[in-house]
Every structure is written in structure tokens, then in C-alpha cells.
Image (cartoon, rainbow, N blue to C red; front, side, top):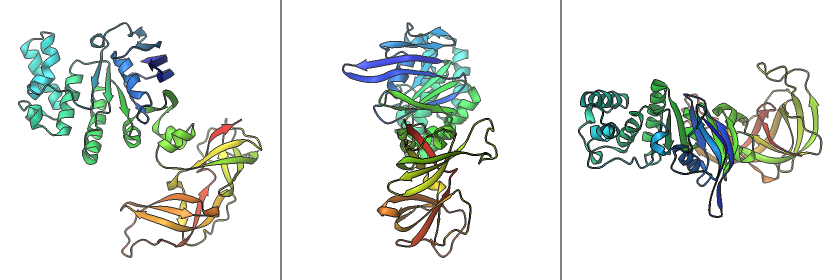
Length: 378
């Protein structure tokens, strides 16, 4: 499926700005961004509920914009379920087949097949008001899938569920996708949802697609300041390039040796000088954005013994520790009272409680390979 040059305005508000993307057949693809970024508008254009001002949408090379929603072979699962309250689970799922006047025996077989797929075999004769939120959503998914569409469109389908149920339903949704193998396009503002299930995702903001990539690519190599801030947590700083030297050997063993890598020294007003590796050729004097994820930073009470030249090292004071069981997040005050966020995972049992406490003096360190230059401003 291809979206090419799609733009859409509502009065003076520009919802989409020349959006283009290609979604592979059978892919679980997510549209991720904050409220008002244009992701639902784009989904509604793909579904046929909105028409773009400009651009094209094609399924397998065929233009679908002239077609009404019911002829596009794309079914939508909404966040409010949109079930018929007076019909049973069975009849909700069977509704579209009844409209098509499919035989009773085929309806029986098909509905039971899809109720089994979404694990609702024992609930066929219940009404929607007798179901939990997760069960209602599974009915909506079965009803959308029974027509065997080419594409399933999911508009924030889990947003009405509580956190634990949402995580459980997310796993089920991914399993359903793996079983049936059709294309899923999933709209969400939840970064963890998108990272958990997507083959690829598009990060959107203010009507623009800022970056398309795998969850690993988006998280580890954000293309913009917005992507770095929006996907997970990070420490983000403006910096000036002091010097950049081409490295003779790649710093990472699995790195493509055909790509040049540079060791760059940056001046960050809030921190001082740090080192970072990059494949982008930068020049002294250029302004860039630098990011380091909290979990990449090592926090210790003793000064690290390493003598490696590519380790960035700062001393600071714990301003606030936030313990959450499996990890502790530290806000550490370093040079010029700058706060750096650090996340320490708790992999081993400790019967003495946390070893780093409020007001402790600590060292923060990270490798030049663990930081990332996000944007280069030429």
C-alpha cells in the first residue's frame, strides 16, 4: 500500500502536509504521534472516511480514492468498539455476512472460526453489555476480520482499556496478526505500544512524517529532536562541534565497514566537552543536537577504573532517586547544576536496599558509541 503526497486541511488548519509512505504487504505498521499530529486523519483517508485535498492512495497499484469505504477492502477497528448493543456477540460478528446474504451454514462456520481466533467461543450468545472492555474489543476485531480485508486499520483500539489489560490485548493483537498475515495499520500516541508490536513505524508531528523505520532504528537513531524526546526518555542538549576525526577502525564490530565513522568532540554549554561517534560528516563550528538515553549511562559511587579514551565521565550529586521496583530513575545534578536522567535496572536481589541514595556523590559515565548526534544545523 502506498500513500503519496497526501495533504489535507480543515479550514485554516493543515492536518497533513504532503505525506508519503509505503507499507509492505503483511506488515504491522504504526502511525505514532501526539494528539493532533494527523495520524487519525491519515487513517481515515486510507479507510475512505475522508478525502485528501491532494495526493494518492493505492492498494497493490490500484487507486482507491474514488472508491467508497465498503469497496476498499480495508476494515477499521475503532477505539469505542462501535458494536450493536441489541445484538449478541455472534450476530455482531455475523452482521456484514448477513448483509451479503451468505448462507446460514457458511455464516455459522465463519463466525465460529473468528470467535475462536479472538478466544471468545464461550461468549457467542452474550450481549455487549455483558462483556469486559477487552472482550468488546476482541468482538470488534473479529467483526472487522471476518470480511477478510487486505488491510486492517486500528484507530487507537486499546485506549479505553486499563494499563494491564491494554498490555495483554496488545500481545493478543500481535498474535492475531501473525496468524492471519494481513497488513495492520495501527494508530497510537503510546510509544511503548508502537515499539512493542510494530515491524516499522512512522513518527508524526503537526501533519508531517518525521521518520520511518523499525522500532530499533527509531529508538536508537532518532532523526529529529522531536523523535528523540517523544520516543522514550532521553537527555537532549544543543552542542557545538569542536573537532571531528575520521576513525581508522569502526568502533562497533558489526558496523558496515563501507561507511565512514567519525570521533567527534562536542562543547555542550551545560556540561562541557564530550565525545560521540557518528557516521555524519560534521565540521568544527557547526551546531548539533546531542542525545544520550538514561539507560545508557552508568552510575556508580566510586570513580570508574577504566582508562579508555572514549568514555565520557562526570561527577555529580543525586538530586532525586525514584524507585519503581525493577529500576530506579536518578536525577543527578552535575556541572552548572544541570540535571541528567539516569536509569539503573535492578537485575540482582538486594536485601540491603538501594546502594545509591539521595544526596550521594556519584559518577556518571558512558561510551562515545552510546550517545547520538540527532540533528545537524548547517
